[in-house]
Image 1: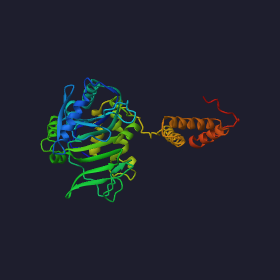
Image 2 (image 1 turned 60 degrees about the vertical axis):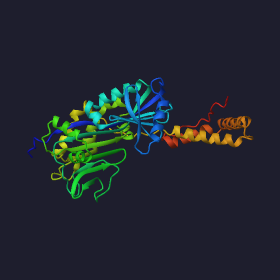
Image 3 (image 1 turned 90 degrees about the vertical axis):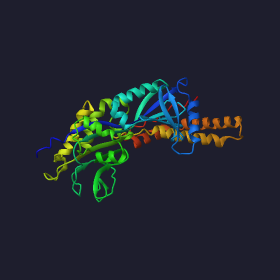
Image 4 (image 1 turned 180 degrees about the vertical axis):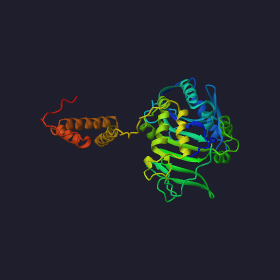
Length: 388
């Protein structure tokens, strides 16, 4: 097949990124929560639901939204980002205290690394950051060619998608239509999703005309359609790909694109073979794969692995809740002395548990059951019962 030389990769990179910053403490000389509270109240005093009030944090201007968002008391917005702030710093014990969503135009204008580094340095001026965590990442490639029209049975799609957006009879992919016109395809679910769609149509519909200037600067022929392949990656999937924070992303972005376009989803030529693993990509997908050159360093051989969340923390919280209930039920009067009596009840039951002669054997049996360890010869040994 003779390839169309006008078809090429125009741009490739990070289109959206959300990063959580775990805060040890705030520098309230720089960030004034009283001022944020006043701006929020001022926005609430207006009539419209989308009204805002202005504020500045160390040289960066924002509009403060009239409402917060879930765990975040303040929501600040400007043309480059949305910043959600919790006023209680707990080093990310329950969730990152600052969550920043970087806007697409900002990322493409300066590059995702410069954008993230500069805003991270800005956050450092008004907070002590323990660590950052990537909550969402959208990476994409724009190809100068019309949206491929796939067979009605969509057998050209070779995907490992676990969750499916079922809108047609095929169980692996869904078509997006505007009238009788196909505008795109979607595969995947909450943690990992792929969208293949006519980006030219999308920017005309939503008014993102600045993309045209970006494409023209990278060799787009005037009037030619642009097709985008975009992967939306959530935190749990990113951790499975060894990507937890921005340092990991800088190192692993090329490997991520390689996995997504070579392992997780491909569009293949079904005319040659029934075994999809042996099938060649169609020309369009070959271009998508080559976009890896624009994502930086490529490390092959990195595999996705399922993270097994530790259960000890959850069990400890459950045990703590049970012991608190025991102490509360042991209280005889509703005052400080009653609470002290309840605490003594907890201590007494803990001593009784530790002196149980069957505790050692029971733990060993449960260890074998839960962890798959081979049973060992029980010696009848006892744990230390000298509880203090």
